[in-house]
Image (cartoon, rainbow, N blue to C red; front, side):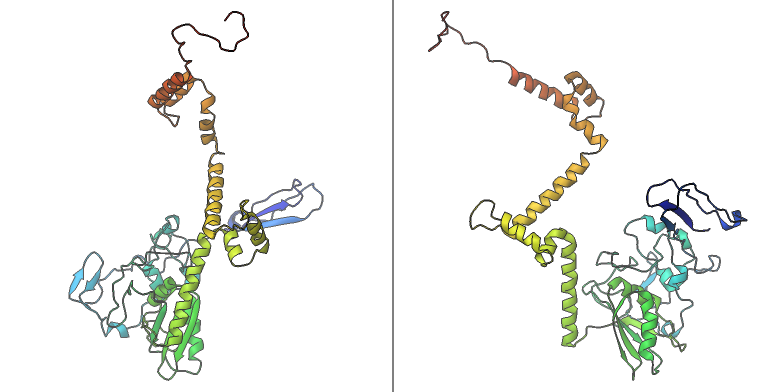
Length: 396
């Protein structure tokens, strides 16, 4: 299918707009003529996102039970429990396939469902469903946020890591670092590790122990580390080795601990920036000096020497945003009829309410009508003669 091209003039003159047909349906090129004078033309090319590609043939795909690594097999989760180590033979067997993000990623049914998880078989390069899959077929991003008790694939975490640091992980620690073992030792080992692990997301730091063939890869986002762990398990780099990918333990280096604490503080500050109004954040960070001067002038509220605290300004701006949101809601046609409802007659309003189109029920309107009738009634004249004190009328 060819791309859709729209031709639009900048000066709002009538210009022909053409849409390209499928390549097999247009045997010869077509030229759109226009009688408007020559003007600057802006072309907008819209490319439709492609569907996800099945990675394996559905006829050959078989969902087999994992090798017995525990004592009890859970038929609901299709995994063994009661064991803390993977099979030694399986850990030395090469993976049957590998995910190619540039070729296999695309939209699936999960893209229309907010909060969907990522496909575990897609990360391993074994998903046969393609665009019919109920999970996401793409890389995680910074906007993909999940419950800390589960990983990006929807699997439940545990309170502690396994003895071999494999499995899903722990919900007591935000781990973004992977341990990569069995790397073939070469002179360009660090460049090879960086090239292969950069495919799964933004890498924050890579440390390679060349003499031991071991590397530590730290991702910026924890979801990317979870995806990379499944995608690179039992994979090969450039020399047909079988990698041993596990979660990394806590780094005892004090500098690393300070760096991790500083990153957590920066992440919390970024979350606060998103929660607060943009003007308020710009003023706090000193990026808007005019706003600071205006706040100092208006902060006295007419009182000499008084300066309002930050929580007062925050409450004021929050109320202004809520008022603006309410004003937008009242602009719609459905809400407008409720605003104009009091202008109707009592019988008409009661009829609308009984029909179910109003915001008040018929009994409520009747009670309000009776209340208004009693309040609008004139007071009864007092019994006995009335004397007009200080009146100039001769009839008194």
